[in-house]
Length: 311
Image (cartoon, rainbow, N blue to C red; front, side):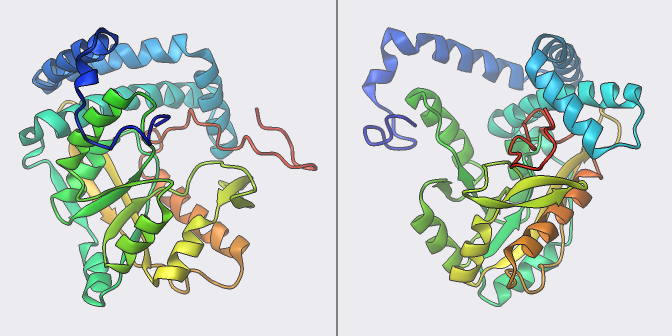
């Protein structure tokens, strides 16, 4: 947050009741009301809002369509458009699912399952931390909630610029995650991994080549972060792929957590080879539920000299 030195995460300040924040308070009450609606109503609202966002957010729509074109060349133009539209619907569904996780968690009862928990348990039995390599899923914090039904996850987060909004989100997430680690708090992240914590970490966005290398993602060269290599070297933590997704009929959805075996020899000697391996893991995850990923982010925005422009 821009005023991070003035405000402590999760702490209430009397300044938050001033008129400049009333709009946020009203919005929060409205969102809490949405969380108690039946899923059938939430689903219909998410569909309407998702279709509206797809039509009105032209720049995001173009990015999502372009990402799907280059990552799924086997799809027809009609399939690309249909799946891009579904990305926006899934994002709106994820908002409602997150509201349910925050304010009405009983809704998830008997809807969640997990596969591969033994891989995380093995690392913890060896007194290792676990860096859970995942994605920016449209499920948002609902994914964290379903994970929390089976183990204690920590999360790396980027604080909100608005201090009231940051406090409210921080407090809601505190019901899900044992620890929330500021993305700038590298010491805290290292400490928690050394203490054997399981931390959800998403190395799937383009932050340029100062923080990464070029490596293929769905066969297309993409700037791929390498910070997790340093974390793994310093903490001796296990690199464990984590994925969660919605499946079944959307009118009566189920949710699954998939934990895969720890990556052998990670980090290795070559950072590009490691980036290729991690990108391949993410590719395989996304193919399970392609539209439950935030494709409206510009995954291929960094194009060094000699590389074809994507957008």
